[in-house]
Length: 333
Image (cartoon, rainbow, N blue to C red; front, side, top):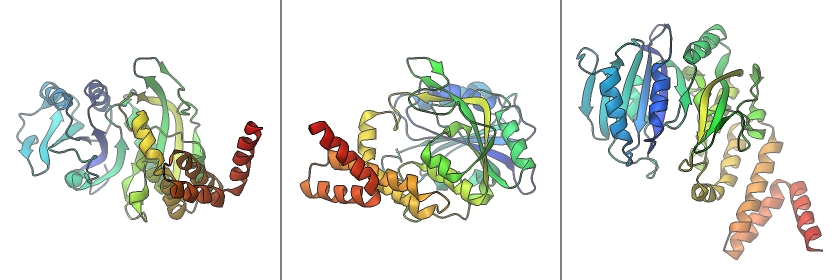
C-alpha cells in the first residue's frame, strides 16, 4: 500500500430510492478480492422508499458492528454515520452516511461529509442502481494503474440491464460493450459517450488541482470527471465486462420529465465543456451547443427566447443550421 494512505482505494456510491437495487451494489462491493484494504463510502440521500432499512439490515448481517476498535455509529448535524469492517472480507470496510435531508433537490454538496475517507490514492465509482460483477475488478484496475503511472484513469465494458426486460450488451444507444483495450482521448468521450460510471477508477491526486470555471453550468458530472482525467494524464479502456449499467424509470437520465428539464440546460453544459477542456476538438462541442439551442428553441413558449435560441443555433454551427432549415423547407413543399 502506498505510504501515507490509510486505504489504497475508496469506492464511492451515491444512492437515492434504490430499495430494489441497492443489495446488488453492496454485494458487488464485498465480493472484491484484493491484496489491499478499501473503503466503500455509501451516501444515502434521505431515501423515502425503505432503502435505508435495507442497508441497515445488510450491515447487521455482514459487518462486524460490535468491534469497538474499528466500528462506530454516530449522529452528526447532517446525518447518521456507520463505519465497520466486513466479517469475512477483512480488506473491505463500509462507511455509510444516512443523510437527514435530500441534498440533490437542494443542490447542496455532500463532499465535506467524506473528509475522513478522502486520503486514498484511487477512487472507484458505482451508483446505487448499478453493480459490479467481477470479484477481481478492483484488483485488475489498480494493478494497471500501479504499473502505468502516466495513466490517470481506467474504465471497462459493462452489460446493460433494462429493468423489467433483459440484460444485454447494447441497449438504447449505449456503447458500453464496445470498449477496446487501448488509450482513449478527450474528443472521443464527447463524440460518443462510452464510459459506464461503475467502471471508473481514477488517480485522485492527479485531478485534485483541476478547477472548473462556472461548474454550476454542468448537467452531467461524469463527463467533467473523465475529461479532467484525460487532460492531466492518459485514460485506458479495458474490454473486460465487469459491471452492469441498469436502466430503470426513476433514474435522472431515463425519466422523461427529468430529461425534459435537463434539455434547457444543455447548451450551457456544452459551453462549459468548451471553455474548460481545450484538448477536446471544438467541432463536436460547437455542434452540440448549436443542436441543443435548436431543441430548446422548439420547446420555448416565449417568442423572444425562441429568437435568442435561433440566433445561437445559427451562430454556433451555421452548416448544421443551413442543413436543418433546408430539411424543414423541403418537407413543407
